[in-house]
Structures are given as structure tokens and as C-alpha cells.
Image 1 (cartoon, rainbow, N blue to C red):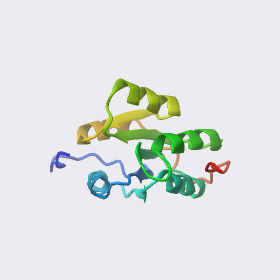
Image 2: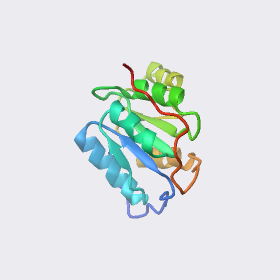
Image 3: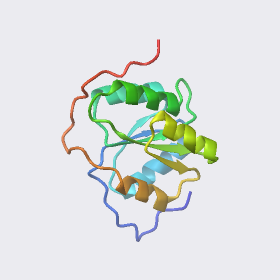
Image 4: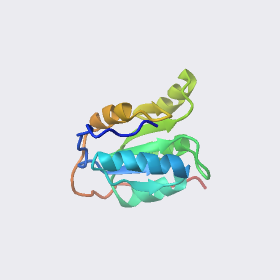
Length: 149
């Protein structure tokens, strides 16, 4: 991943971000970039943790790794889309799989955008700038997201 430059003057601190990434090095790199954008993300290491977190807190955006243990990002996205009546987060896929079929699977699961790894800072900023911030105050979700039995 390219290093953030000193010229990076974008402030996206108004966004509530959940980073779902199981790989420790990737997670630390993405957090470092988000911090440079004035974002302090919450972190989940698998899809089940994502579902737990979205039940208790509203997120404007979820940066969702596709391949995670316990529950992958596509499955977690489907549960979020089916289970949250209001306050749907903007979900951006983060994946090393950059084939057209992978993109199609992400969009079919309900994701809003797609970023391939290695992460481009410019591409991440572009994707985050498209996210509409719902509110600066946490909002309770209207429905519970239930993991599969």
C-alpha cells in the first residue's frame, strides 16, 4: 500500500466507520490511512463481529473485507441488508480478488462500492467522499440483525 503523503488534507472525520478486516497487517495499514483522514474506526475481525457491532451502533460506512473467518463479508452484508430497516450503512468491499465476477458478487450481495487490494489511498478517499453521513448522533437501528442459526 502506498504511504500517505503529507499533502493529504482530506478530513472525513464526520463519518462513523467500521473496518472489517481479519488480516492484522492490512488492518493496521487501513487504520493508519483512516487516521490520516481524521477517522477513528471501530474494528471487527470477522462477519459475526460486524453483525454484533451494527446492532448497537449506527455506521455511515463499513469497509468490508470479503474473505474473513467465521462469516465472510458477502454473508455479513446480506444479513445487514436484510435485517436493518433503517440507517443502512454504505458498504465498501475491500478485496484482493479484482475479477469482474468478484465485483458482481459484491454488488449482488448489497455492497455499494468495491476497492481492490493493495489499497489505493486516492481510491479510498474517492469512495469515502461518496458516502452520505446520516447523522453525527448515534441512532439506534430499527431492527436486529440476526446471524444465521
